[in-house]
Amino acid sequence: MRWLDWYGDGSLYVVDVGLACCALEFDAASSAAAMRLPRLDGQAQVAVVISGTVTDRLAPAVAAIVDGCEQQSGRRPTVISFGACASSGGPYWDSYAVTKGVDQLLTVDAYVPGCPPPPEALSAVLDQIAGRVPS
Amino acid sequence: MIARGPSHGWIRLIEPACTSCMICARECPTWCISIDSHTEPVEGLPSGARDRTQNVLDRFAIDWSLCMYCGICIEECPFDALEWVSEPTQPTSTSSALVEEMVTRPS
Amino acid sequence: MIEIAPQDWPAAVEALKADGFEYFDWLGCVDEIGRGDCLRVVLVVRNLSQDAEPRMVSCSLSRTDPRIGTISGVFAGAAWHEREAAELFGVEFVGGERRRLLLNPEFEGTPLRKDQVLAARTGMNWPGAKEPGESDFSPSRRRLAPPGVPDPAVWGDRDASQIAPDPAEVVESAVGGRVRRRRS
Image (cartoon, rainbow over all chains, first blue to last red; front, top):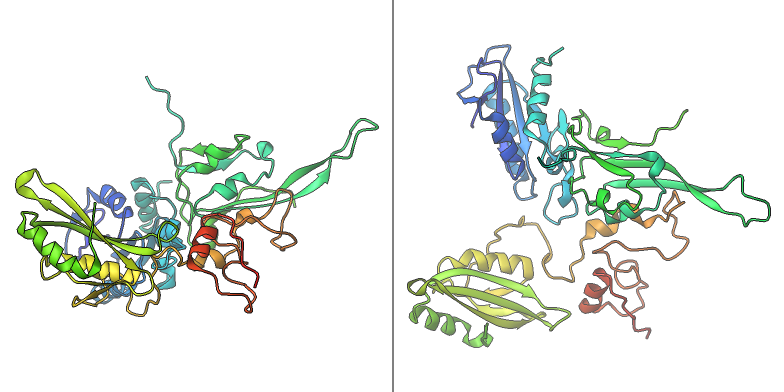
């Protein structure tokens, strides 16, 4: 599991499930975050970002990654559906091979629309989750 | 210096310009635009004129979970009733909240 | 593009390789329904010592029983391409590996054949089916169909006593052509 210490202070660890183009926007948003094994105290939050199209074939693997995050971190991760494909199947909703939204598999806490959303949209959603929204 | 329009962040409806012609909903590749409309007679016609009706837009919604931001709707609209907005569409905590109702009627 | 008969396929590919075309580029399949009633398997190989000159060969197979010998013995890399063509088009590569590559094991159908209609589109109400000035989907009159959805009279909610649609008719209707159905 590739844990990114988003703010560099151990308060929020983010795992990306990089499935398609949205993964590139995730990479752009996360370029400053260091990859570190999580030192998870009681306060630290964990977020899993589903970036891209979930195909029916890969759906079990996506669910397994989120489960794995929960197992390894000892807490339920905040699930972010990043982009149109993860939110509903996006432009591929009519495909014979696409799961129409990752919320068919797991509970999603935040939906970020976009095709792809800009990196700032991901940073903003994570800031909200971490309670760091500037007043 | 190249004049730049807004970047492709969000799509906005200019409601007074919309005639409910349905072209954007038909051209949208992902079927993300939903439109409801009805017809009403046109008032104030000169005496002796034929009855005429006009379309009244009741509902214009875009499902942002489906939209792929291609801009075809904006390009196809014959009345320039859709435009790009630079800010990105806002995240939501439920998928139904991703459907944005763009026609607001006084209750 | 050189056309090869199905029974000559593996031998022809071996001959190409012996002739210097030792680089396997890709193997694919095209559903030619509407233009010819066949599935066409296409192979591109390259001669790297000659500026990677490509050679394209193809073989037409019947849509009802598309069988061709595997070339994975000649080019091991062809195995994945053959598995993909097999599961998406229903082509049988005799002697080749039969495992699914991209689709779920439970998946039924051959989705890249043109007469396989995207069922998700036919099941949904197309927002564009409404006319200007309308708010409901009630089928009071013949409606516009969106791209990819055949006319219901041709495919779908048909009268069961009518003849089953010919695949070519389904394809033509799905791309927006008017299909004149036989009535008897």
